[in-house]
Length: 346
Image (cartoon, rainbow, N blue to C red):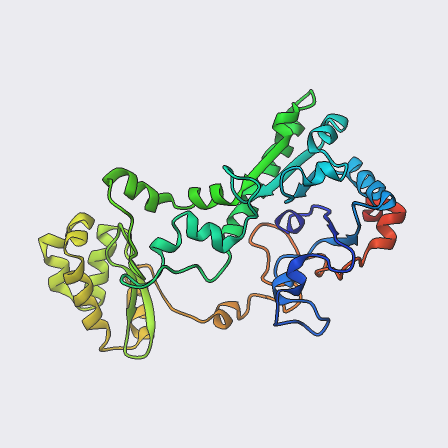
């Protein structure tokens, strides 16, 4: 969908009758019977349902591949080859084609990859949730999202390399493999580096931050807001804006390292202070003082005024546009069977 948002022509090949599994991941379903989950990630694509075991349908797929710049698939190893679609053979036959496989586990490619399992095995759940609570997954399927973005980046890089080269790229440079577990592991960033540098296990911090103080949620008289003081100057401005001049003047708290050492004292003083006013009052004061902060809003509030649609989802994060709503299963079969890529006018 990211590539489609940026203008790519995308054909989604699905199983006849059932289609993409996420079409059935509901409720909620819209008035057309499509699952909200499916709608969230399938705009800007055309759909055709093809059975790779049927000779006529396989021929259609081979024809689409022949005219494609990129193939993206997430079959388990060997599954496509058994159906007559060996990636290495296809890359050899089509020297400009880029092939991207999205898999689950780099060290055991035969395992199906699901976001929750990867969050569990790659350490995410161990550092998410309340400090003394149970392991917790993220509300969004962020491993899937990260892997999708990694795939889009890798594909764009391969396309750029192809465009710069005066000779066909070697097949190895056109064969891209993205694994959910590697994307998840890379996304551990500072949490992983903390553990590597200190030799100590990473831990949960709830709504606080492992490396910055104050950088967390606080409860005001009427609700929650966050303070994200990322520098010593911002901390001083924060303390003064909250009327905590003594905190700003205390030499123990002049550096972030000092504030980390006295985390409970710093955050305790702020927590007690902000309970005396409303979240909006504190955010207004902090904003005036140029301290990063914000109200904790609901999803519905976050979407207000953004142009988000019950049909096409949240607007693109990349430069691009919504050109097509999520397709019904096999919606574009007639034109694609008849014309292939020419159906796009390309």
